[in-house]
Length: 282
Image (cartoon, rainbow, N blue to C red; front, side):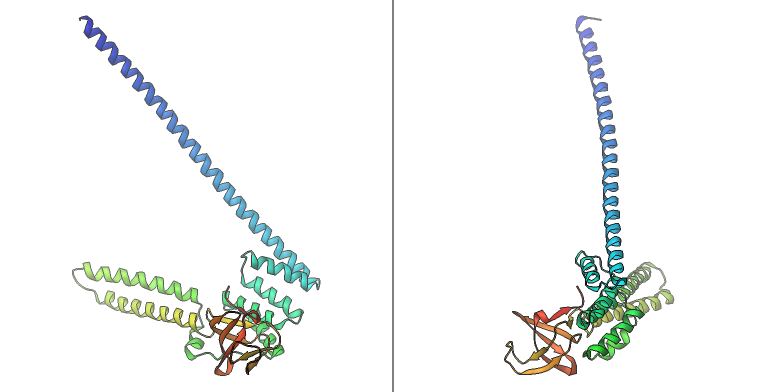
């Protein structure tokens, strides 16, 4: 063994030692990073869950406080509590139903009907809201839009239910189509199921479209002000087309400044001050 061989061997041993030390540090570093990442994710999860829990608890407390005010006859206070929940996005059929009841007790039939309609838009089969809506309409002599026959027959289900039906039918149809493409023999059951899935999907899409644009669709609004008249032009001095009691239904067609052009009950149309109506769907 000569001098250069000894030096080369020493250099290789030093290099191996340095690499081993570096890898050890790297493993410790990455392990530390993994632990830190896991802790960070756990902390974020706990914070998110905690914030959500606090939010739900706070909304439940506000809802209970509003209910207590209603039970004790403080209807203005109850209205403020329910409206606060609505403004914060805490929408539910029961919140709108209770808000409608509070407005009904203050003889504000327009907003009572508005909130009963909103409750039914979220939960179509809400018997209490349906019954109170009819009572409020009778009290206010509110006018209703005439529904077309597709609207009447398709309203046994909601838009959400039709959407779920369309998605399920679509994927069943895709599965049947793939089966027919790759199968050596085309089974009759797959063909029949494909036709049924396509028909169901088409029917559900039509129902969604019809309900969204129908008398109870996205453009439905309720008259909430007193002494509202639909006019032939955007001026308070224009001739009146129809007197609209509070709670009457209108369907917004277009907007021009502070006025809306709306489809009215009795198959009429006219201009209404925008501030006198509110849309059912938020």
